[in-house]
Amino acid sequence: MVTYAATLDVPRHIVVHLSRLLAARRRRLNTPRGSRALGTFRQAVLVLRWFRERNCVHCLARDAGISQATGYRYLHEGIDVLAAQAPNLHDVLDRCRGEELSHVILDGMLVESDRVAGTRDNGNDLWFSQKHKSFGGNVQFLAAPDGTPLWVSDVEPGSTPDISAARLHVLPALYKAAADGLPTLADKGYIGAGIGIHVPVRRPKGKSERALDTDTRTTNTLIRDLRALGERAAAELKERWRILKRITVSPCRIGDIARAALVLNDHWK
Image (tube, rainbow, N blue to C red):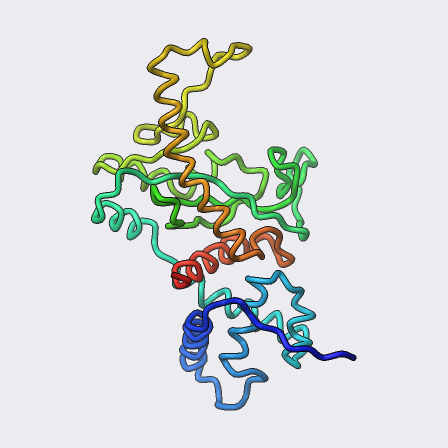
């Protein structure tokens, strides 16, 4: 057995913030002092290592000197307290209008998973995305014009198209926001989403982009250019909180994990 020192590359104030959330949860549960295997600070480190380093829970539990079952329980507790701090969709849109943002950007993100269960009547796996050729869950997110992640939806199985997931979780609120002067930009996967959701016009099948008139091509270019800044939102979340690249827990937890990552990302600044 070889021991070594390591440094967690997360600002200390984030660890302290999560530790305080965990301590508040323990107080609400009336947890007796000294009855837990880890204090809240060490539990926060365990949770953040999982988000940041994609370590297996078995290794995290071993390093903390606790059982694997306790490690999973502490991990899910950390996810729950963080996800509970995620902003509400309507509050986010109200804030965007208050800050007079020109628009918000809607996109989908597949979070891959290696634990899937559930098939449809046709025998296809519910969590398999034909678009990405991978298993995982589909989450919708909103980003500010500068690419700052603003909001993340609950998870839908990977086989769910972006527009179907958006109709379930976000489009009704975006219609009202558009009526109040806050339009949404999206990609071609959201064609037919409705009024206030601006997407590029698809060229006729078998024809080149030149088949579209000049005004339409210009509009498409403007939408793509403005959306490009928002595309970095998913990349920022996945690169900073690497667990979003591929999770090893139930895919049903992907929505909570993504919301927890969003909360951590907001406190990184």
